[in-house]
Image (cartoon, rainbow, N blue to C red; front, side, top):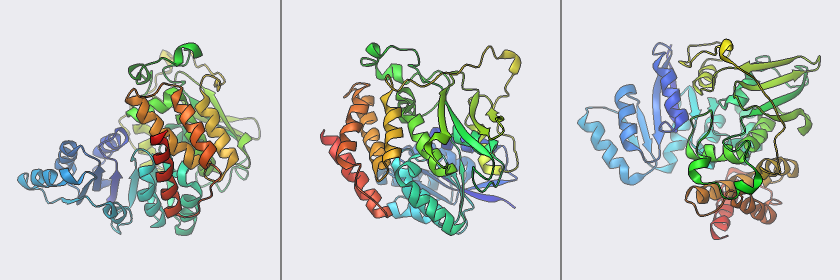
Length: 388
């Protein structure tokens, strides 16, 4: 029986990779809904190939253009563009699997409602747990939703744990080890980082990703957000059970150390189709379309400790997680504004952590308990950061 998939963020890198995997398995999966922000031409092309029942485009001005293209092609796909339509699709009774791949905190709303509806949620949007971890995980517990991580690091940990484990302690886990490539500035002196350009920051040595996540990788904020996500996904007894190591080759995607000192790692080529395929089929395995790892071509696997002096964003993430309250939400919102400024060449590389620190000082102590409170504080922090 075919499983219906709704892809939130189908025009982004994760969304496109998900379609690459689905394309290989027409006997297993059917695309029920696609969503995007403004790339109506690509959404149209995806609709032509996969013929979903629904397509959502965030930009309402482009909805009519997309609708006209679909009519001219005699496609029956329904075009949606109201914000409430994302919730409608996330909890639709015919949807079996939700790929949450909308970039940034905008992905929290559909993720939350998909989890609340008890869906199998493939989580590529780490900000959902960074901003609303307690809310989302409590909803999953109540609805018996399945959350499977898609980030390569969290997928690696998930694959290195016994499937269906109840807790890290019960599984005999000592700690989980997240690997970081180190980004494009792994060996760049601090004195030079102040003046790096957007073009330099976007040249990731290993991964092909969207602009925002690539900048986050260059500041190591991406790893900081992953630490926070790992805390909510795997529920360690304490933060000492999470470790980050820099692994420039991006071959070992993450590891789990057990109480007997054994370490189980997940290895593979740096291709997001591998964790996507596993998230779709776990605990089974399906063809991903990723290239195979050839051990004879590996020259070295090296590891170092991250430098939080040169990359303070990682420390800010750790500090926010320790502080609690809404610190992680504030960290994420401020970071998104700061990264946007950097991409527009309106701030420097170190202007990113500086703005985050300013926002944390003002808002970190605020407590949020509901989705509305989370969204309200998120907006307030962003407005504050836009003015500072």
